[in-house]
Length: 257
Ligand SMILES: C[S@@+](CC[C@H](N)C(=O)[O-])C[C@H]1O[C@@H](n2cnc3c(N)ncnc32)[C@H](O)[C@@H]1O
Image 1 (spheres, helix red, strand yellow):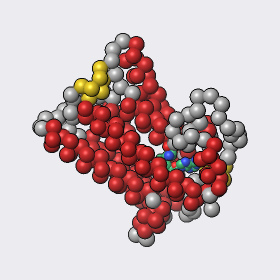
Image 2 (cartoon, protein in one colour):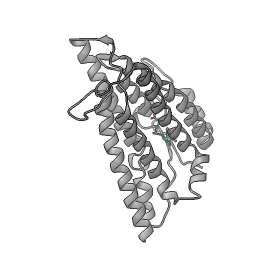
Image 3 (cartoon, protein in one colour):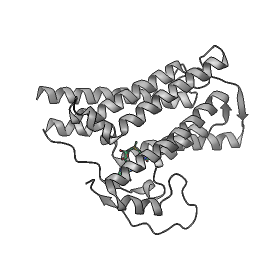
């Protein structure tokens, strides 16, 4: 029982660190400096070469950790050393810590690329916030507490394993296969003031998301087979069809084998 309580404490701590990193992410990308003192365009000094080098390394570190730890083979290896119920929290904790490092050590390159004012600025800011809303909503559509490791710890308290995540296509998942990533792309790109550093952040993250989604879909096909292949044929990856589209059944749900 003590070990199970420790797992719960670990999961709650990881979730708290995630919440901190999420608030900083919103402040960082949106340059909201009353929320966070350092942000994508504020709080740095040094040469542009140093900034590019440090920023690319930070983004690469995040991409590497995130991609490697998300793979089923890595999870199987890791759970030889830690309880299965603590695996997701470990992923969440490490991802959040690396994000905090990135936001803390980021070297801004504030040279402007575009600066839009008036109505255009309001539209872009609205799209930016819509992006964050889509990110948050999508975590709940998939299963927020499973994604962030609390569900696994709660099941462990009752000495059982959390059920595997079933395949689902609720709401936004009927428009695109990856609404959560679409939300990030909107939050990263929709800004009235784009700097060189921000552009680099958005472009490298976009490249990472596109590669990461190939890996995620490979795992989803391995887990759900033809159900996912059919879904992939019917529903676009990131850009919703504006008109028409093929018939999508009300709700597809299938347990992971
Ligand atoms: C951080 S979520 C991102 C989900 C999706 N890529 C998106 O952008 O909305 C990643 C987890 O969601 C799971 N996942 C992705 N699509 C899913 C679906 N349609 N049904 C159930 N799980 C899904 C993946 O297996 C992975 O564990």
